[in-house]
Length: 123
Image (cartoon, rainbow, N blue to C red; front, side):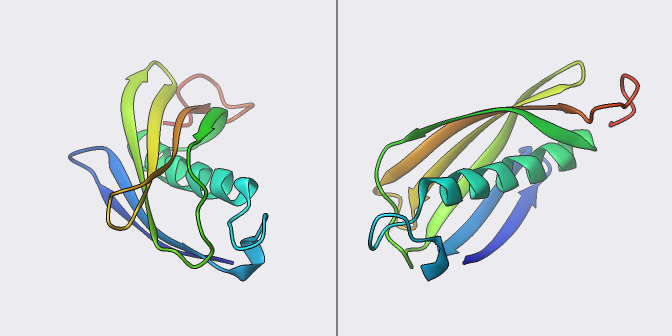
């Protein structure tokens, strides 16, 4: 199902994920399920937030699905930490075709300290 590799660029606070969805992620025939897209976005943004801010959890994830992703296609999931405010990390993500011609989805996310942590402990 999920075949991917992630690369973190600390200077840019960015994670680039090379993702190729397998046949177990099929929704509509021949296309990846939207929930699988949400999962890889969440994994990419979570990895970015963890690298930038320490132990955090997803507080909000908003996705705009723009073009379907064919099964087996290689896509680039580009996640970035846009800003930090207190214990929150604000993130953005784009999913593009490997050639860069198609924008499949765009997302924003917000991560924060894990529940039960005193303020700042997750950092």
